[in-house]
Image (cartoon, rainbow, N blue to C red; front, top):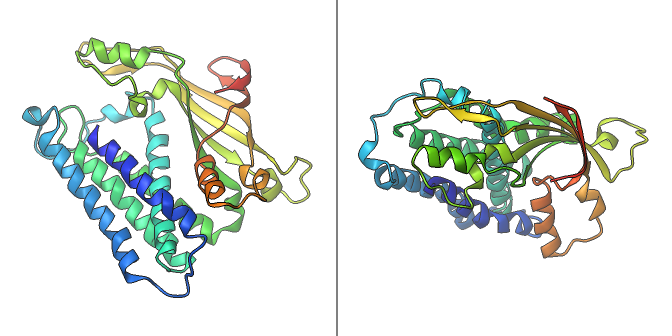
Length: 296
């Protein structure tokens, strides 16, 4: 999907801001950089409109409409975790961009939240014309919550101990099997819609959250949420069934582990690891109990 490719493009563009912002002199605001950061949202909206007009379903596209409720069942709300993280990621990317442009921390975080919300709006406006979906009020609300999560953390110090991550490992082909039953041929790399192989995590830095914690500083605790591979299609081609999965796992405090490594490459690596859950010992709590020495 083009809009998701555009999101990746914006992510790559501002990925450099994350590292540069830590080196820049933020005593003066650079107006050219502020304009560059701000104009990228217009680029994203323009790209979304182009997708609506030229996508593979353009001849089937509908007028603007709201989602009738399909988004609440087809992935058992695992996609909602994706929208939250999408809002969070884009918010932090824009925030880093504004810090790179010289804005102070609190303003950068707030502007990042508004622009991250704009990205979520662009996604829903694209879906509003899709024949199979529609503008999802829940997706937009949850994506907006993710975009404003850094603002909440900025003004509530204890919540800085919480972070949200994503992991992906192809354990099942059910997504591709169901799409083929629908008469579609998704890319072999279409991980973004492959919810049965995605896991979303909330990680807790116990040392930061609890004073005098006996847990080593390099270890975090993670709670995971995912979807199993027992979905099927009904007569209308809608995905039904499946079961939610819940996990308890160890995680790594990579900021602490890599605290003495501060080269430009290190800063970029830390940025990636801030959002990606590395393999670690894990217990699946539901729908059945299972221990994984190294869950991917």
